[in-house]
Image (tube, rainbow, N blue to C red):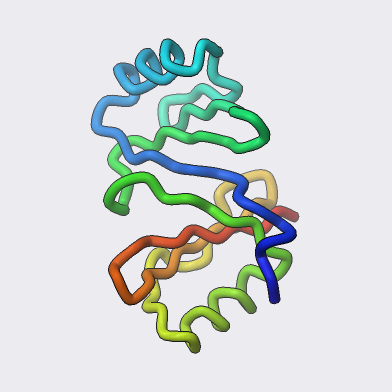
Length: 114
């Protein structure tokens, strides 16, 4: 199952100070956030959503690829040699996410919208 057609949808940046990160990215992007709460701040940038997550559970930014069948794609990637990262979970609005880790330790995000 190809994810190329679905494309890159979201990039999450774990941050230690959500307020400071929000101010920085607002200045950098020249735009106000489209989602703004105490647990998540998000910006829409050229069709890609950039999210700031306090105390994120993975190192560095993680790109999330949209897939039509999250469980199937996770299983397929584990069979191809990836290891499990964050398990499949719902994050709101019917969106489900998970991560796998490739052979070089890179975290690959996958998402499926309802």
